Length: 73
Length: 243
Image (tube, rainbow over all chains, first blue to last red; front, side):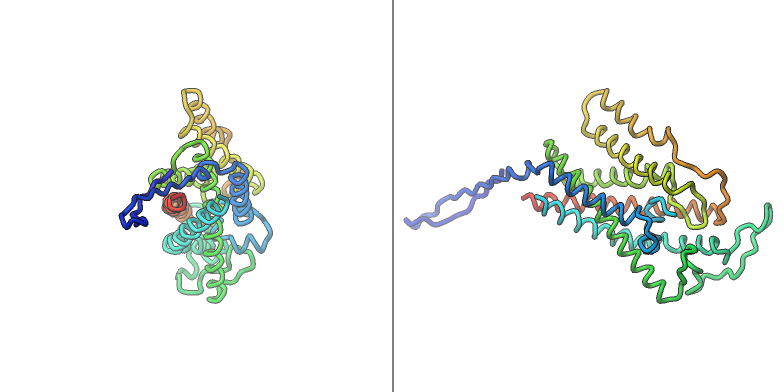
């Protein structure tokens, strides 16, 4: 939860304190489903770039696979 | 929330991937090309046992890199450029994949009430390096072209098992409580190495071990540096967007 103070002028011409309160409860409630989804997207990228054995993919990714220690041919 | 994870992971991954590619071309690529020269026979390490090598055409001028890995590439200048461009592309892609897995880890840790900041992000980065590169490398060192390894499917299975066990072990070690979870973490971290990685029946690699050793050490060094950047950038972005 964040609190921010901002000066504002009220209708009587005097400065008033305004408090803005952001509820960032959503931050802690990242759903497990979306976590699993993002992890799966990442794992799929790693599988395609690192492990898939189609020869086009293999040739293209060859040097990087060797250098990042993915088992390669 | 999904957008925050995807954007943060991808941006951090591409940044770390570009850094990794830069270090790759500074330290690693020339060793790969040198290994390939032995693999293709352009250079010969030992012609017979106990004899000094007879180096054929031992100059490393431009265009002298030899065919790439016996996969039907030829290293004219144009194909060297496209080869290197593909290496940059796939390095950023791989690090984007690492980045997504990493931020999924951040989200999971936060879900259980653990705060992620730049400092802990750096530690997460190092842990990611241990998980994805160092622990697998203890059984299957990064392979220089022209060296020998066991059958591919078995190595990929061992690699995957090692990554999963190491990730679980490190998470348990960091966030678990009590002696039992520490013991379980130790068992998970040790298990892949107790089982052992698949090894070839005999070693008949044609590239000199000196080059293979330098290649493996440099590949791991580059990995550590890039992962540290990945962890730090991903955690910084993670906090920025949360504010």
